[in-house]
Picture 1 (cartoon, rainbow, N blue to C red):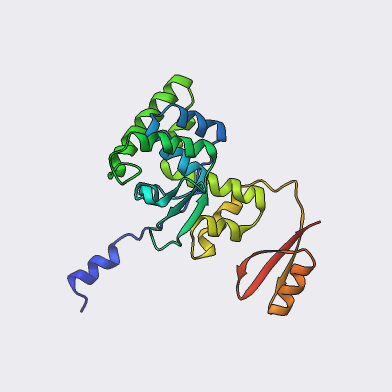
Picture 2: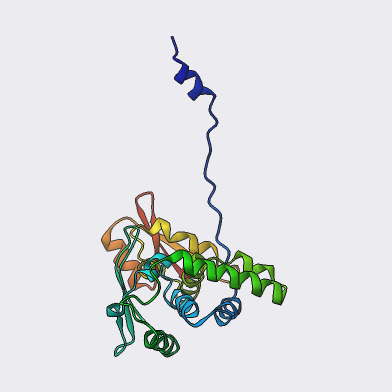
Length: 223
Protein backbone atom coordinates (compact mmCIF):
# COMPACT_ATOMS: atom_id res chain seq x y z
CA UNK A 1 0.00 0.00 0.00
CA UNK A 2 1.53 3.37 -1.00
CA UNK A 3 2.48 5.71 1.81
CA UNK A 4 1.46 9.35 2.07
CA UNK A 5 5.00 10.36 1.04
CA UNK A 6 4.85 8.12 -2.02
CA UNK A 7 1.57 9.72 -3.11
CA UNK A 8 3.12 13.16 -2.68
CA UNK A 9 6.18 12.26 -4.78
CA UNK A 10 4.01 10.99 -7.63
CA UNK A 11 2.13 14.25 -7.80
CA UNK A 12 5.15 16.56 -7.51
CA UNK A 13 6.14 18.45 -10.68
CA UNK A 14 9.59 17.88 -12.15
CA UNK A 15 11.64 20.88 -13.19
CA UNK A 16 14.30 20.84 -15.90
CA UNK A 17 16.99 23.51 -15.86
CA UNK A 18 17.31 25.20 -19.26
CA UNK A 19 20.77 26.55 -20.06
CA UNK A 20 20.75 29.79 -22.03
CA UNK A 21 23.54 31.14 -24.19
CA UNK A 22 25.21 34.04 -22.36
CA UNK A 23 24.81 37.64 -23.48
CA UNK A 24 27.96 39.01 -25.12
CA UNK A 25 28.31 42.82 -25.12
CA UNK A 26 30.60 44.80 -27.40
CA UNK A 27 34.07 45.74 -26.21
CA UNK A 28 33.04 49.38 -26.39
CA UNK A 29 30.20 48.77 -23.94
CA UNK A 30 32.56 47.07 -21.49
CA UNK A 31 35.07 49.92 -21.80
CA UNK A 32 32.35 52.52 -21.21
CA UNK A 33 31.26 50.66 -18.09
CA UNK A 34 34.83 50.42 -16.79
CA UNK A 35 35.45 54.13 -17.44
CA UNK A 36 32.31 55.09 -15.51
CA UNK A 37 33.44 53.31 -12.32
CA UNK A 38 35.68 54.52 -9.52
CA UNK A 39 39.42 53.60 -9.61
CA UNK A 40 39.26 50.36 -7.60
CA UNK A 41 36.09 49.00 -9.23
CA UNK A 42 37.44 49.98 -12.67
CA UNK A 43 40.66 48.06 -11.93
CA UNK A 44 38.62 45.05 -10.83
CA UNK A 45 36.60 45.09 -14.06
CA UNK A 46 39.66 45.63 -16.26
CA UNK A 47 41.23 42.57 -14.63
CA UNK A 48 38.13 40.49 -15.40
CA UNK A 49 38.12 41.75 -18.99
CA UNK A 50 41.80 40.99 -19.67
CA UNK A 51 41.98 37.59 -17.96
CA UNK A 52 38.49 36.09 -17.95
CA UNK A 53 38.89 35.00 -14.32
CA UNK A 54 35.86 34.64 -12.06
CA UNK A 55 34.90 37.54 -9.80
CA UNK A 56 35.40 35.20 -6.84
CA UNK A 57 38.98 34.53 -7.96
CA UNK A 58 39.68 38.24 -8.41
CA UNK A 59 38.39 39.16 -4.97
CA UNK A 60 40.82 36.68 -3.35
CA UNK A 61 43.88 38.31 -4.94
CA UNK A 62 46.66 39.47 -2.65
CA UNK A 63 49.47 41.85 -3.56
CA UNK A 64 51.89 38.92 -3.35
CA UNK A 65 50.02 37.39 -6.33
CA UNK A 66 50.91 40.38 -8.53
CA UNK A 67 54.38 40.47 -10.10
CA UNK A 68 54.95 44.10 -11.08
CA UNK A 69 58.36 43.31 -12.59
CA UNK A 70 57.14 40.67 -15.05
CA UNK A 71 53.62 42.11 -15.36
CA UNK A 72 51.87 38.89 -14.35
CA UNK A 73 49.20 37.83 -11.89
CA UNK A 74 48.88 34.40 -10.26
CA UNK A 75 45.31 33.14 -9.86
CA UNK A 76 44.23 30.89 -7.00
CA UNK A 77 41.38 28.82 -8.48
CA UNK A 78 37.88 28.32 -7.17
CA UNK A 79 35.14 25.78 -8.04
CA UNK A 80 37.72 23.05 -8.67
CA UNK A 81 39.36 24.97 -11.53
CA UNK A 82 43.03 24.94 -12.47
CA UNK A 83 45.53 27.58 -11.22
CA UNK A 84 46.66 30.03 -13.90
CA UNK A 85 49.15 32.83 -14.52
CA UNK A 86 48.26 35.75 -16.80
CA UNK A 87 50.30 38.46 -18.48
CA UNK A 88 48.78 41.89 -17.89
CA UNK A 89 48.73 45.00 -20.06
CA UNK A 90 50.64 48.17 -19.20
CA UNK A 91 47.29 49.90 -18.72
CA UNK A 92 46.17 47.41 -16.09
CA UNK A 93 49.55 47.48 -14.33
CA UNK A 94 49.27 51.27 -13.98
CA UNK A 95 45.76 50.89 -12.57
CA UNK A 96 47.00 48.31 -10.05
CA UNK A 97 49.89 50.56 -9.03
CA UNK A 98 47.47 53.41 -8.34
CA UNK A 99 45.32 51.10 -6.20
CA UNK A 100 48.34 49.83 -4.29
CA UNK A 101 49.47 53.38 -3.46
CA UNK A 102 46.18 53.91 -1.61
CA UNK A 103 45.98 50.42 -0.10
CA UNK A 104 46.63 49.52 3.53
CA UNK A 105 45.66 45.87 3.11
CA UNK A 106 47.45 42.79 1.82
CA UNK A 107 44.44 42.25 -0.43
CA UNK A 108 44.22 43.95 -3.82
CA UNK A 109 40.47 44.51 -3.50
CA UNK A 110 38.00 44.51 -0.60
CA UNK A 111 37.15 41.29 1.24
CA UNK A 112 33.45 41.42 0.38
CA UNK A 113 32.46 40.79 -3.25
CA UNK A 114 28.97 42.18 -2.56
CA UNK A 115 30.48 45.63 -2.01
CA UNK A 116 31.93 45.67 -5.54
CA UNK A 117 28.72 44.17 -6.94
CA UNK A 118 26.60 46.96 -5.44
CA UNK A 119 28.91 49.65 -6.84
CA UNK A 120 28.89 47.89 -10.22
CA UNK A 121 25.08 47.60 -10.35
CA UNK A 122 24.68 51.26 -9.39
CA UNK A 123 27.08 52.41 -12.13
CA UNK A 124 25.51 50.06 -14.67
CA UNK A 125 22.03 51.44 -14.03
CA UNK A 126 23.22 55.06 -14.17
CA UNK A 127 25.07 54.47 -17.45
CA UNK A 128 22.11 52.67 -19.04
CA UNK A 129 19.88 55.65 -18.24
CA UNK A 130 22.44 58.25 -19.32
CA UNK A 131 23.22 56.60 -22.68
CA UNK A 132 19.71 55.20 -23.15
CA UNK A 133 21.20 51.76 -23.76
CA UNK A 134 19.39 48.97 -21.88
CA UNK A 135 22.01 46.46 -23.01
CA UNK A 136 24.15 47.61 -20.09
CA UNK A 137 21.58 46.08 -17.73
CA UNK A 138 22.37 42.64 -19.19
CA UNK A 139 26.05 42.93 -18.20
CA UNK A 140 27.00 41.12 -14.99
CA UNK A 141 30.42 40.50 -13.46
CA UNK A 142 30.47 37.02 -15.03
CA UNK A 143 29.73 38.58 -18.44
CA UNK A 144 33.36 39.74 -18.60
CA UNK A 145 34.44 36.07 -18.41
CA UNK A 146 32.00 35.12 -21.18
CA UNK A 147 33.25 38.00 -23.34
CA UNK A 148 36.93 37.08 -22.88
CA UNK A 149 36.34 33.42 -23.69
CA UNK A 150 34.29 34.28 -26.77
CA UNK A 151 36.87 36.72 -28.11
CA UNK A 152 39.74 34.28 -27.49
CA UNK A 153 37.93 31.55 -29.39
CA UNK A 154 37.12 33.95 -32.23
CA UNK A 155 40.80 34.90 -32.43
CA UNK A 156 42.43 31.47 -32.07
CA UNK A 157 39.71 28.93 -32.99
CA UNK A 158 41.49 26.81 -30.36
CA UNK A 159 39.02 25.37 -27.85
CA UNK A 160 41.82 23.86 -25.75
CA UNK A 161 43.43 27.29 -25.40
CA UNK A 162 40.13 28.71 -24.15
CA UNK A 163 39.70 25.76 -21.81
CA UNK A 164 43.11 26.42 -20.23
CA UNK A 165 42.46 30.16 -20.03
CA UNK A 166 39.23 29.60 -18.11
CA UNK A 167 40.74 26.91 -15.91
CA UNK A 168 38.09 24.38 -16.92
CA UNK A 169 38.81 20.71 -16.23
CA UNK A 170 36.12 19.45 -18.62
CA UNK A 171 35.94 20.60 -22.23
CA UNK A 172 32.15 20.28 -22.18
CA UNK A 173 32.06 23.43 -20.03
CA UNK A 174 34.04 25.33 -22.67
CA UNK A 175 32.20 24.20 -25.81
CA UNK A 176 29.39 26.72 -25.26
CA UNK A 177 31.71 29.47 -26.51
CA UNK A 178 31.90 27.86 -29.96
CA UNK A 179 28.19 28.65 -30.36
CA UNK A 180 28.61 32.39 -29.81
CA UNK A 181 30.70 33.03 -32.93
CA UNK A 182 29.22 33.36 -36.41
CA UNK A 183 31.12 31.01 -38.70
CA UNK A 184 28.69 31.20 -41.61
CA UNK A 185 31.37 32.66 -43.85
CA UNK A 186 33.86 29.90 -42.97
CA UNK A 187 33.73 26.35 -44.31
CA UNK A 188 35.56 23.37 -42.83
CA UNK A 189 36.51 19.81 -43.67
CA UNK A 190 35.91 17.60 -40.62
CA UNK A 191 37.54 14.26 -39.84
CA UNK A 192 37.62 11.90 -36.85
CA UNK A 193 40.49 9.99 -35.25
CA UNK A 194 40.08 6.76 -33.29
CA UNK A 195 43.75 6.14 -32.54
CA UNK A 196 46.80 8.18 -31.59
CA UNK A 197 48.33 7.45 -35.00
CA UNK A 198 45.27 8.79 -36.82
CA UNK A 199 45.25 11.91 -34.63
CA UNK A 200 48.95 12.58 -35.29
CA UNK A 201 48.43 12.20 -39.03
CA UNK A 202 45.55 14.70 -39.03
CA UNK A 203 47.63 17.23 -37.08
CA UNK A 204 50.47 16.83 -39.61
CA UNK A 205 47.95 17.51 -42.38
CA UNK A 206 46.95 20.80 -40.76
CA UNK A 207 43.79 19.73 -38.97
CA UNK A 208 43.00 21.25 -35.57
CA UNK A 209 41.47 19.34 -32.68
CA UNK A 210 37.90 20.34 -31.77
CA UNK A 211 36.60 17.95 -29.09
CA UNK A 212 35.92 14.35 -28.05
CA UNK A 213 32.54 12.91 -28.98
CA UNK A 214 31.25 9.36 -28.45
CA UNK A 215 34.73 7.88 -28.12
CA UNK A 216 36.38 9.60 -31.10
CA UNK A 217 38.35 12.82 -31.50
CA UNK A 218 36.97 15.37 -33.95
CA UNK A 219 39.32 17.51 -36.06
CA UNK A 220 38.67 20.20 -38.65
CA UNK A 221 40.52 22.28 -41.25
CA UNK A 222 39.41 25.27 -43.26
CA UNK A 223 38.73 24.55 -46.92
